[in-house]
Length: 550
Image (cartoon, rainbow, N blue to C red; front, side, top):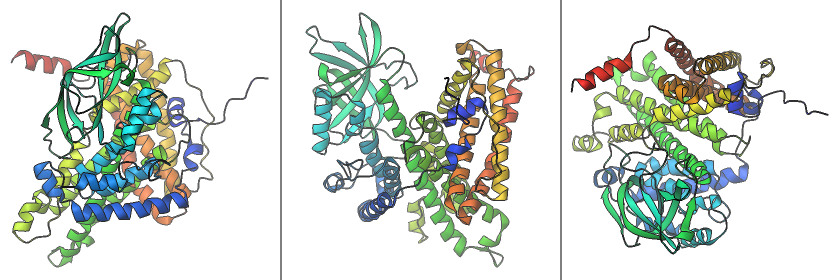
């Protein structure tokens, strides 16, 4: 007897493709267990005390150097092994919270911990099959080695295969690596590092990842990376005839830049980087804003009494709620099998919300928003480093790949569902009993309608461009599809969390966020419709003519 199809989508991306909001999934919103929560709170307090007492964020930003002895102290306290039963026992979600707590003092220090625990050699162990490479990484991790992962070539990381080469020796015992990597977190302090490279052999080129100690002959750190923010974290390195034992390599294929297992772990790392940084920016923005608003008046009227100021504060509180909600959904539990898509969209959601909150805070504080902490100290003012965190917030939209590239990938993942055939159609969502306030129930209904609109848009795009490569080349339309998917995910996450919270404050924050998100959704749908109009501006001709003119 044939199986009955499910009554509702089984994943978020299936819901997007079908045009049916998967409320059944989000209504069962994941919550941290009491034991996990207590363990995390204890560690957050401990780590917060350490970084507050040992780290001067402005000094790290200025010099790019960690305080003397900090790495050793972090190692001895077990902060290099925060995940799982072999470490401090944190969940992936609480790892992000721990990094965010350190980020509030210094973005570079917090993100160093996240790289160490989230995407570097020890963190990749679950993706490494049993054997000599697994044993090597486990041993170095147990020794407390600092590690990193180098993927970005001077030509960028969006080519299908890396520019760095790996050549197998005649006896097959080792690979010889040559190339350069830029902007690599922990590269300047790492004991062990993973490197992506392209292997050329009889079967054609294929991707691979190679792990080596940084004292291997031919490995050279060339320079620290000076960014506009998140300083002290990254460096560039060069590989000159570096020999890596063949048993310390993990090979993929010619279709992906990284082997699949490594790519999935890297996707988590990029998302966690953005989420932790955004949570730190949002928490700091709220702290700075509260102090500023409390002491300022205009013509005898307190700043907190003005409508625009109230809206600024409420928007930042709601954005914090949204980033927390997206991270909980994506990281707290395994949940539905397909969460890789959510990792893509959570990365951009977090980075964008952190940036917008920072931008609002700079405007609220006016001159104090763009004034450096050093300048404030010289005149005896409260030295909130608003300007430094504004730079950090903008950097989050670039690290782990540029925001519009991530939007494009999210859009392609969704459109691929339509290119593979018409997705399943499910019964219409019933919103009669959702656990939401009346206002939020209306937001849910609007989001449900937007799911249907997105499905129709995707069907039209695929019908107009049946060849996948031609559709991918319609980059702006694909990017807008990815952005719309991100906004709809944010809406689902905040409404799902509010429904399960049993808390009026959660309902209010969800309402603030949903109101603004719906404006963005409406604009994205309008812009996607404009992309289909025949009289759209000829951007290609304008740019080509300008470039041709020199």
